[in-house]
Amino acid sequence: MSAGAEILALAMFATACGVLMLGFPVAFSLAGTALAFAFAGIGFGIFDLRLLGGLASRYVGVMLNEVLVAVPLFIFMGVMLERSRIAEQLLETMAMLFGKLRGGLGLSVVFVGMLMAASTGIVGATVVTMGLLSLPTMLKAGYDSRLATGAICASGTLGQIIPPSIVLVLLGDILQGANTQAQLAKGNFAPEPVSVVDLFAGAVLPGLVLVALYMGWIVLVAVLRPRACPPVRMAAGGDGLAGRTLRVLLPPATLIVAVLGSILIGVATPTEAAAVGAVGALLLAGRSAVPERPGPIYAAGAALIAMIAIANLFDMRMQRDVVPPGDRAAFIAAAGLAVALVWGIAVSIRRLHASGILAEVMRTTVMVTSMVFVILLGASVFSLVFRGFGGDRMVGRLLSDLPGGAVGAMVAVMAVMFVMGFFLDFIEIVFVVVPIVGPVLLGMDLDPVWFGVMIAINLQTSFLTPPFGFALFYLRGVAPPSVTTMDIYRGIVPFVAIQLAALVVLALVPGLATWLPRALFR
Picture (cartoon, helix red, strand yellow):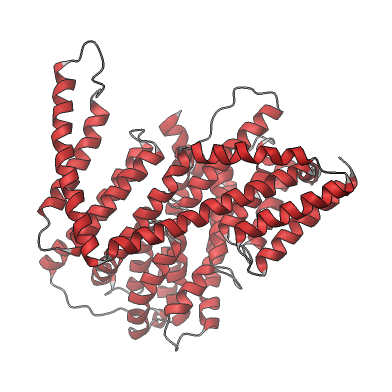
């Protein structure tokens, strides 16, 4: 490939980043920039127009990709749970439990952020909800505004690393292709697959480590600067609080176990688990809409859990020549449970439609899903043109020539992603950068699961780093006037440092990401 083609590849990448930073729509910026440079390359005689013919097969591949079906289902699940006031109930209950301790409200925010991350995975909804509910309480209790805003923003971004996470779903799909490409280039025609399930399992321990580091920082501040996070006196009885805690914690905990547990133990694929999560979120929202008559919802929830257990314990295929009596009985029981589940879903839909929540959730789900997939299609155009100019080979040579081999290349890529996170959204970085550098780094014998989790933690900082950190804007929009923008910026500094420290720990101890997938699936 000529030097002119590589110059155009670099210019195209720089132009796309500049256009994105100017605020133009992501999908059309990526596709439009790529097409403009492709036609320029045709004019210079250094780009083959026939390469664009591959777009059709790429788009068909996206539409036929079963893993990506999990994206709208997880989005629906997250939006529905956010509208069902679960976060509000969790925050109030956790504040009653821990508020009497120094730093207790901060610990409650991090704990609820962890639970919301494992059940919704939507950063904006979590930050806004906790900002509206907990920030006024923390400020009224005498909390330092920087600690309060930093804890809310940081805990709200946990949905990017704690599964089920949309980032991990998208990364898993991209890394699967990148790993296959890297292994084929090395002559391995039967590469070991990398799945979203592997990334989910690999992200569990690093996500919990990050939660522990957040809580550890709040405890340290409580010890060193007790006035920054004083205790709060909450009125609640012992027995009543215990019952309330169980009632509030049990439904989301059950949903988390049903979704994430079914994926990790191999009962369901991520898409099937996402469907379970969407149904579970619908039932929880229906119970929250009309709490006085929870019978149909509880029956449907129990039926859903029982059906998952039956599907795991019995062979439900009835087309066999010989069907054992136990399997036949299980099939009949599952049919009866399905009736109870459909009844509960119908009751929930009727309640949510009457309250107006269902239409709002459906509209938001369609909008977010459309945004993600249009960006994916636009990024496909960009990636195809970039490779047509030979940009992938240029990046491969650049990373291979860096001192330190695979370690030096990994450090350079992580540094570039961190800096890009100051200006670009995580989806843009995933769709633009990972397809380019992924095959090169994975060709250097890096573990793909560890690599994916490292990227996920790095991208999490893009929500916290000014000037375009989305979590900062979300909180700024709901924070009272007494909290300045500079308070929010200064408040997230320790938590960004904690995320970078977690990134270093994961780099030094790769087993945090690789141990659980190997223990479960190897």
